[in-house]
Image (cartoon, rainbow, N blue to C red; front, side):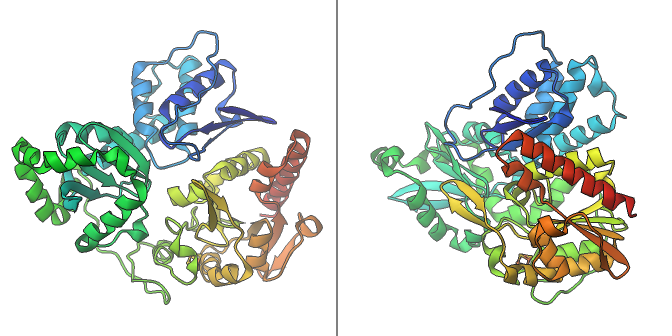
Length: 479
Ligand code: SF4
């Protein structure tokens, strides 16, 4: 679905691996001569997973890109990084613009980055196929094989056919945080994921499965009579790979990392220093003080926001950055990706930084609150503003980021960031754009890019975008 957003084209895909939607949109954008920097990509995920994907209307005109590029895109679309759609479109744009053999240019930074992403998906696929651990669960006198797996990427959909071929006559379910796949011997059903925080250890998986099963399945769709009478296990016994399953169950855990490392020729990392932070679950490893802090924050339970979010989203950027940007909290896509400002607001911010002449890779980007606060609404997770207590508690991490990075200028994106850093309520319209002394540093308040996305008309979006660019440019000039 293509939506015009003043100077930008916003593409909303139906789900995280909506390859056909991305492909149709990329073709349409290229034929409309819309360059990559004028596109914003996001995923709706609110619609029925099994609804037919709505794609952009076919455009007239000559359009062809090498088959290898299409195959590569089909792999990279599975990467758990909201930037993947834009990166792939940038490749398509260049190929369509005449660089037909762009993939042969292995020194090209974009090609290198996309190739690395593809390799990461292949590695994840290898792990899933080799080390998935099924457990036998009895349901209504029949047997189901259930596996819990935490992929690094969105690989369940692409790998479900592999497991169907391999365990065709078994009844099985694969549960992951973002998606579950259920095979009843005839039909594959994809459903929302199970929450990692709700999945118990292996010994309790059976009990968990029963509760999960009853919550997601319509018994009428399970062919109960057939399951009871056919006893899937007798088919399972006849499978040539059956002997491998007990082995997987017994040894998967201890073999996983060593075999994956060997298969992928990844270097063995040396022991790393550890840091302990009160109020966290453990003493995670780290290479640098900033990484140690990020690792400690990953285990934070200082407030309740960790309970429902997917993960801590820590700041990122050079530890020596002179400019720090502070936002409010991660959004839906940041929560899934584990990185700040990668969703639609992040893409808006990137565009404003480019307009202001600021390279994002030189900036340290973080948030006042490190966990995504939301309210469920159907299948959507709607942003909820963190309250002053949550901001104050999470300031523990932001203060330490500031201490380690020591930025000369801090740009506060929105009221929550301003409250976290200045320690008081701020009216953006009254204080934006001016220098606020912070010891050796200066701070500036400006709007949050998500505010621009919520404005109802193009003229106000353009006006606010220009004002944000002005603020960024001014703050950058203070360096
Ligand atoms: S929001 Fe901040 S303080 Fe609360 S649990 Fe997450 S990291 Fe910890």
